[in-house]
Length: 309
Image 1 (tube, one colour):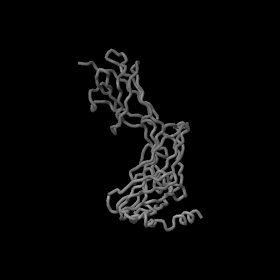
Image 2 (tube, helix red, strand yellow):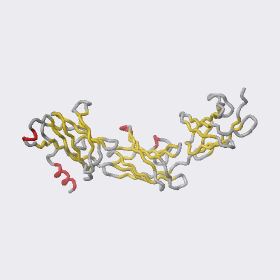
Image 3 (cartoon, one colour):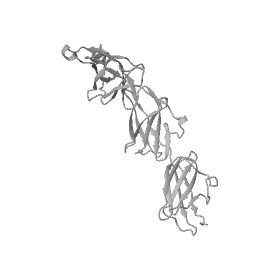
């Protein structure tokens, strides 16, 4: 029933020119292109980017946006054939929709060619993210990653841990969750290769909830040659993938960096006077100690500054 309503409404309008009156056409050397965009669920597609292209070339003839009613109009086009690309927040379709092959729309002087389109309805991924203890995880960055097209659709969890992402339809996604400095994937894994791939159809909602793995914490204290606390020193955590996180020692020389991924790492300190030292009392990366952060655990790295020669 729904499909027949859409097809009836659009029948005969693709590339169908409307002939202007003789008075209007007189002396006119350009034509117009107009249309409306809806999706396969019948919803108006507002604020979509419309790009008018010359076929088999990179030349952009004109650009427009659909209005609140899903309509657009481009005037002053030279006579010839044009393709219409519809961009919807990160994915595109060719008019008249649901096709990988562009249709050529003929423009004639003094006429308006009507090119309506029905595009695939967007997909959606929703769910709830909880901490390792089961509490709602607020402020977690969530990304639905489409590997085939090297793109992602991003959002952030609300105070109750819920999220909702609007995604390109008919694609498969990996769900990435980043809490602080710890990136992990659904369902509850730190390895992307172990992540589940979720297929999201047009107009469909896929629910992916995820319980986060427990993050690790690095803590410690920096003292000077005499054993007094060193305040205001920069502490730099460097993992084996060259990822880095920094903190600053407080008045007691203490520092803490939380929400870290498990794994091996090294630490160096940089004082406000410019003295640089790797733990433990090493002057370079190669001589520095390699530490390991356990999943959900804490590593303590204290160090004492070497005398300045």
